[in-house]
Length: 401
Ligand SMILES: *Cc1c(COP(=O)(O)O)cnc(C)c1O
Image (cartoon, rainbow, N blue to C red; front, side):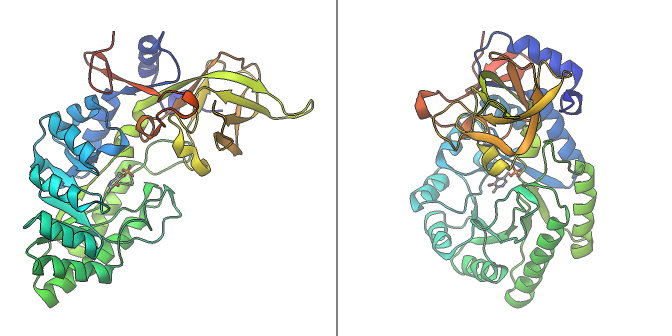
């Protein structure tokens, strides 16, 4: 049903088959070279911008180490992520606390570790920042409405109306903080580039009115993530995103473009992963049923949570591709009926697929292994392995024999 070539090159595929041989399934192999390539590409596409990798997308130590070496900064959402990044020797001035939902104790903790850049979208949170992180830079996340074109929307829960953002930035100044900028996230896997245009226009209005009415001169626009990985639904190339977004910025800000920050997650790591699952059972629900149920040892609870509502549609391939195919319903191994990956959208797999065969899920480097449950039904969390220049490492960065 899918052409492996469209997602993974021959060389990478052969190397993957070689190194993944003998590992118990389900597992995910992350190719660091692919992540490096994507990071260099996004940097080259936006030469004027700063990058804060949103580590929740794939917090594997080998990934963080490599992006650190390549000069990335880091967007952190919890004290646990903070501890991880600091433990790798990354300095707190390269870290931004991008989560608007946090406890006062978390703010205090980040401040005590040297972090001085905080996102907010509410008065109560801003008060905590003023109190526990005095003098820090704050940026306010605004709501961007139309997320129907994002496959994994991140709006609604985060951000506030621009009018409220205005008030919060005034309050920030009046509480001794540094009103630093505006942020937004147009939704993850955003296929409509025009979404950035609307968001940048709102940002421009805030920059202008705060300067004119309050003499507050903001410095930064943080555009979050949203750039796509390669799943089955087509998207524009990153170069199209870059040329359009750069044009929107010039349209609104002329030559006086503020500091621009991106927080890519999915677009950096998504394409790097191959999840290997094994067929546990194939059945039909009645003697003449046209569809087969294919149950795999990977499912919603161990790596494939983003199949929720069939939101992210991964390319799925088998070693028997090329033979005659039929429609399947793809489900996981647990005793929860929510553990069905695809039922409405019709995947087709070879008719000669057998129990014990391998089924490969491509583009599974983002939002997979750390999204797995710790042991639902006793199934352990899926293991991730990282293909580095020096061999295979586990998520903690230890060598694997
Ligand atoms: C998750 C997240 C990102 C990353 O978004 P992607 O669409 O995966 O690139 C960036 N910024 C914030 C604040 C996030 O929560």
